[in-house]
Length: 201
Image (cartoon, rainbow, N blue to C red; front, side):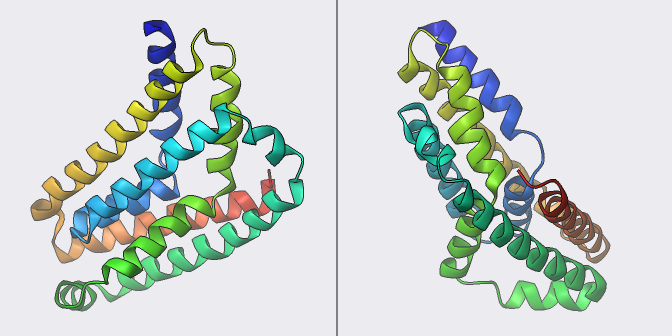
């Protein structure tokens, strides 16, 4: 059982630590301290739910509906492109945009919606959580323990992102730092959108 748990922890950890749209978005929320623990919690719940569904049967059904993944792919491209544009606009405005953002933060509802969209409109999330990770889990002695290990990795990672980004906020909350952060996040979002566009699934 311990071996299955550690395998889930390591495999999932190796996959989710790679910087992607979800991680970049959560990190930016944490640095802004804008409902970042809500975002982290939603990411955790989504991962745990998808791991469980993937291990116990939904992956086969998903493979039988390639058109659903194709629709998700293009929705993801559009949404990530929109996020990239927003980041580039914030980066170009510099200090004025930062000061305005400090006065008027987004509502919890807006943050929840965006977090869910970034998480669920990325086809790579489904490939990882419903196909790749379950494929490894199917070879384990105890599937439930494997899912527990994978879930632990997700909870630890997103918790670390939320805490770490928030802790760094005083250091990074400067006009130039924000312009760099928003610019980098914009490039990452755009790169992921382009990757989805040209490489598909």
